[in-house]
Image 1 (cartoon, each protein chain N blue to C red):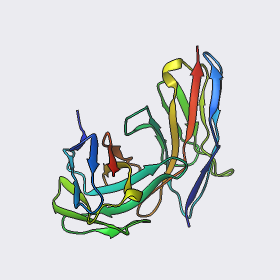
Image 2: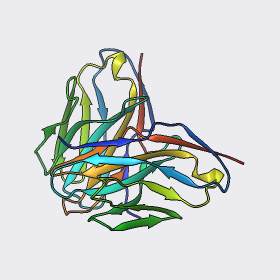
Image 3: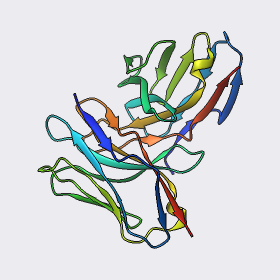
Image 4: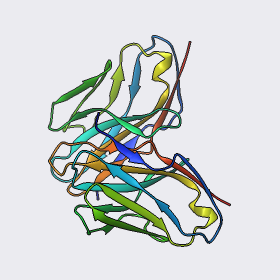
Length: 110
Length: 113
């Protein structure tokens, strides 16, 4: 069945460092791919999405490119801020429902 | 601003109580979902619904039921609360159209004592 695998955390970075959080997926057909962010004590918020191969989703300085050849959707940001500290979830939308990764906690130090 | 509203942020209930968690969305979405979130286990789907009065079991439906009498409201019911149901519960809704993401509520942290 469909699945999502993302890198284990926590990831700890200094402010202004480059961020990559890896995400790979297994799915039949052509799923839509998403990144969600969860700040402490909150629900998940949609960060960005891509609906077909080679699409690049972007928002708030974060980017991810839908790579069908490597079945990946890695999240990147060129310069992280303390306010980016949160848990990030990779997800795919399959035929009927969403599949989420287990989440990667990011901690950014000033 | 579109939203999904969960009726309580924090709840404390006793073992054996019947517990209702309410979720309302104002986006006219057909699809609604209930997840629980636990450390190390990520999000696990409990139940979902694609239309009024219909429901489908997710990955962990045992000990739960749901009700969807109106399109905007999706209720999660713990028939007899147990301590292993202490968790963060997240409601979400989405359009069935391809490429649409979820909109999540802020979550209900339930503690069963």
